[in-house]
Length: 470
Image (cartoon, rainbow, N blue to C red; front, side, top):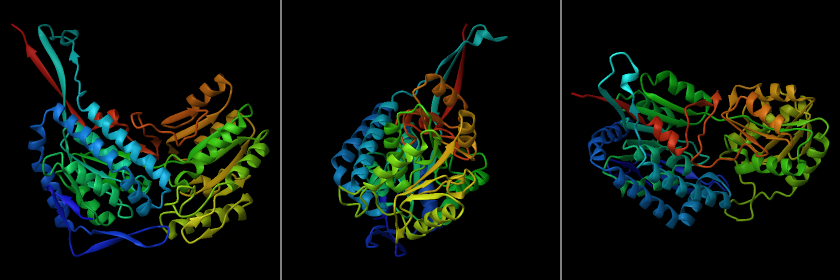
């Protein structure tokens, strides 16, 4: 596939091979953009601001609805692309496409809801006789940088709201899984003016630095690692920035919890896309009185998971994105066991595959839980009382989402209040997300909110207009 710059497909002789993480076979190739390519894309986006301003909100909304229709029509093909480029099991890839269709429709609906407000000018000294109101305007050029794990949905979560607000865009998808995002941009390009939607593929800083440093860019929205997020923030100057930087999400199981429900949630949350999800359950903080029962049932359900070819609809566990990632997860598992954690199930690695792993008696300072572990690992940390559970949950620089299982409303409200996280879910695991909810964390998990309405708000400027009466 090729890049999209100023409404045209742009190739090049210098290309990167996108390979299937399951078998290493080449899926397709994409261009490796140079500085000149990126500058052309940015300049095209800058020029296209005038064309976008000529479009009515109704026209933008209709175009995004048309995009949603095309995504739905291509659901099977897009799901297959996601699976081949990322190793995500096919049924989860289908879910991602369904969510992307819904996200596009949400963008279409919100395009007609860019409301301002009236300002009571006479509430202030000298304001009598004045009428004030605000309007919301496009911020300008939005640069979006997306990761490999949700290559389609995270792209539409950034580009869709930008267009809904009347902005132009430059997308840099992950080089490891760029194909579904490029197809999305091809579809968007058919419905918006040339230059409104641009997509460039290339190596991290060779492309990213040009985007980050460009005075043309008004807003950067990024999903990825803390390291890169801090780097972007340090160089972004006066640009508006939204950073979604991952998580180390806890699942707290109190002694009065429904253990079967908690175990089911733990399995779903810990092993979704082999744990390569920012909101995956990465720490299971379990009351000591129910920990044995929880661990036994967790191992039983983990044993039933089927690993294999992600194209097979029966596959639960696919490969990690590359062998380097798998080796790192294996290292952390072995380090925990050497440090005294008990290996209850799994722990082995074969190429890109890491066996679903259950660890018990994990201590909070062990690297497998102190840092974000991007793999299919279920570490159990035992606690004595609610105070300790909260301390453990908050004892990390991440604060994205958290789940709490309890039948006591008082405990639920206390946990919701005291846990540091952008979202606290009661009797639900942290992997829960619907595409219109505000999404984003605190501390190392980033700043700003995604979720269509909230992303659009961050992609607009507010102008005050004041009229003097007679």
